[in-house]
Image (tube, rainbow, N blue to C red; front, side, top):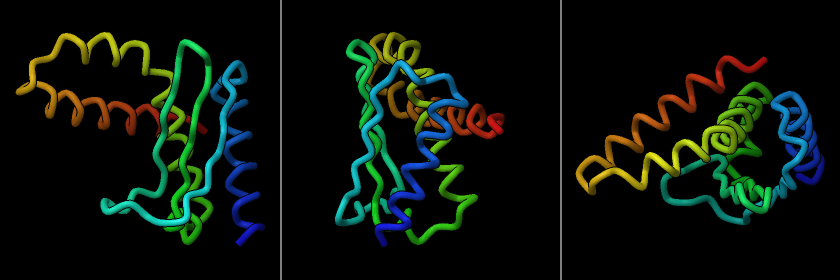
Length: 116
């Protein structure tokens, strides 16, 4: 299991460089339990202090290399678009919020698939 954790961290460092996110302190946190929705990874970014917390759930460690790369690219794409998203999210009504979140996730996924 430790070997797989190091492998995931190495992929994160690889994409941190490829996506030009070196100014961020990216902390990879291995979670002990999966969340109900079965997310493989989640992210929490602080764009003011340039900190990123990438949470890796056990289900991610059961994934293929291609899947792990896809998850990492998706989560790190959130960091890139966060400044725009946070400004837009502040101007949505509660009714618009659910659709906004769905649209944002679709955009993140689309952008992340463009990254080699």
